Every structure is written in C-alpha cells, then in structure tokens.
Length: 207
Image (tube, rainbow, N blue to C red; front, side, top):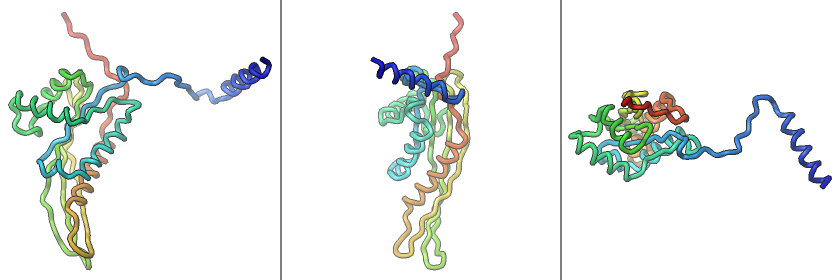
C-alpha cells in the first residue's frame, strides 16, 4: 500500500512540475467533431491514368488533412457520385461545375467542405541539353474549396506546375515529368489552402 501511495505521490509531483503551457488530452477526437473534407480529382482520362501523379495527390491530401483532425473522403464511390450529380446538373465537364453546385453536392452528403482539383495537361516539349534528352511539361490545376455551410469559396485558384524528365540513354519519362509538375501544383495548394480542423457550425434556417 505504501509503495502504491509513493507512486501516486511521485506522479502528482511530476505533473505539477510541468510548464504551465503543457496540456494533456486523454480523449480522442470523435468523427462527429471533425470536419469532413470531400475531395474530387478530375481531368482527362490520360491524366487520371497516371498512377504516380495520382498517388502524389493523395499523399499530399493525407498530409494536409491528417485523420486525427479531419474526415477525408476521396474514395472511388465519391467519383461515381459526382459524375452522376454533374449529369443531373447538366454539367458537361467537371471543371465547369460552380460553387453553388459543389455546395449542393456536399450538403446532400453531409460534407463540411468540398474540394475540386481538376488537372489540365499542357503542351509537352522535347529537347537536347548537352548529353541528355529532356522532356518538359506544364500542368495546370483548377483548385476550388467550398464551405458547404455558406456556399462560398474559401479558396479558388488556377495553379501551374512545371515538370522535367531527363535521360542520358533512351527516352525521358513523360510520366515522371507530369508527376513532378503535379507535385508542384499540390505543394502550392497545400501551402495556400487553410481549412480549420474545427467542425463548422451549420447556421439555423429561419422558420
């Protein structure tokens, strides 16, 4: 018994000696208290088939919206749902979808934020630099982030990334060049976008 009391007393002393700003969080954040961020990634078929670029996008999103602070939704079911939604809204291309439509899409599914990232492929260029063959490409990314509660943009930019691949022997990789350009777009997006980890309060509708 004395040994147990000694351990408890030492624990109390060690906690009391911590700096004033030190905090303890003994509870985990429940999914209901975290904002849900749904991300739609679009582009031409050839763009979406670039697995390396798509992997970089998802890795960047998982870093920007970690699961301990956000509910991140990026699954294939979401892609199917936005395609059906766009058809119902008579939207020919996903890049043409408006903020009000994104907010409607999110509201119907209880999302707090809807992110739309649409990739466009620029003109690729080949050239020779000293003893290597180079392939350069520009990628533009239309980035939209809509606050579902307000129906307004909290971020809207057209981003541009440049990628280059070189090969001393053989041909440079257009896949790698595109992935590098996409990574630069995502780096800018993650540096500039700011979504609070606090779940927004949905305004009450007046009766």
